[in-house]
Image 1 (cartoon, rainbow, N blue to C red):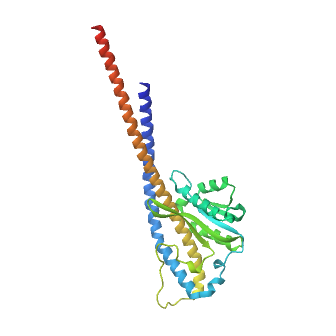
Image 2 (cartoon, rainbow, N blue to C red):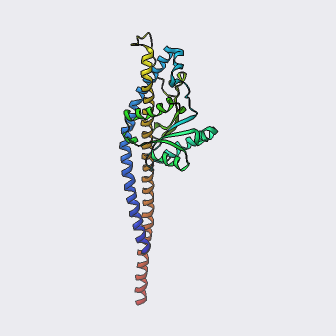
Image 3 (cartoon, rainbow, N blue to C red):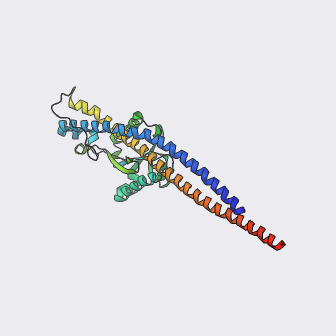
Length: 298
């Protein structure tokens, strides 16, 4: 009977775990819908502003190359904005992003040199990973947390990267995040944020940015509009990347919790089958003992 009591306790424990993972799945599903709506809503604006910057760059022609954000930085180091999660229980989300980082580091000896790469980090999982490997972490963004990110927070993040680039500390700035493509597909993606390559504006997107057709009257002038628009363009790219990253995180967490709930259900079903067999064996054994005793008395 001790075995039966033990099985009953295990069935109860698995049931409790199943309730927790189901609750976490429901929470992840609710948050996923909110962030997915924001990610989808931000894409048209990102495409439009990219198309406008590209058009103005074509209007200005060779003048664009003279602007600091379109030239290689004066520094010798690379700045990387790495976006991971603050918490675990989200499947392979963090490991996929960090694997992409390691592949990038292995592709060039300069990338593997800790003295030549500074990291700006969103998410404690990435911070812990880099800290254990003695990488230079220039800044960990903790306010606002990624779940509460808005355009202002993304603008501050982009501003910190632009300031480092313009100060002559970095030669270039890159961004690594998980792009949200579908509920089950989140692709680790690199963005060459700075310097801006005028010829590549709009490339790397599944949708073509808007193109301005015909003659357009620009006030006050194309150069002034361009200089004011480029910072907004960088802020928008960072904002879109952060929103897609948190959307990918919750999509991965939802799937992970669903798999855990299904696995707990299968384990509970198997344990109940074993429990019922043992219980039946005990009942049968007791009946045999009763019948054997009765036969002995007779």
